[in-house]
Length: 114
Length: 112
Image 1 (cartoon, one colour):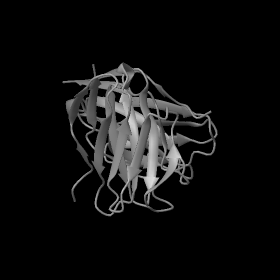
Image 2 (cartoon, chains in turn purple, green):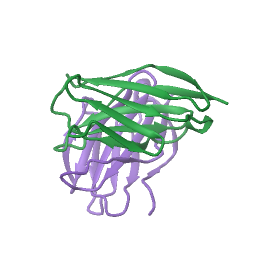
Image 3 (cartoon, helix red, strand yellow):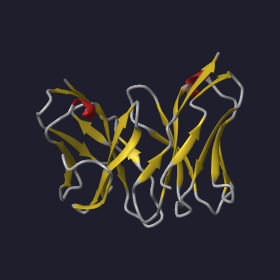
């Protein structure tokens, strides 16, 4: 079974630009979450989608947004990039089950804002 | 109340020794406690997880001990190997949400 696939792996953007990151979950998984990982703040929850609906959102500014498509693939967008947005962005997928909250992470997209 | 506190920040263990990482939480609504292992350049990989109705869970060389009254849980790595050298994260979540709150991580180095 293929794992969670994130594209691109690396990205360099300039301040003020916007960026879109993509995530393909494990086949059959319907929930997709996004996390930001930085040395200073660690792993922080951005948002979670299930059946194209955002069910949870972390404490990030509105510049961070996401969506999920009918095939469970997800994208996240960051507009008006700031230097502090440089981070590893991780996507995790989970099978929908009331008793199973296992989250499987992709390798991440390393975003550098210059 | 949403925090998960993890210690130590870093840990050095000799090959064959026991590595112990501790975590504490405040929110009693948490009902799922996973541990993740992350190698440089990779995403976190789920190692083992426990729920509050169990005090201990073992999978191979990895054991989670859970103390519900103290709101603490720990990861024990028995017979630690150089290949275990990685960063370990504890986390806490709720069945009603796929949001995980992560600890700050422990960088483990196992010396040959």
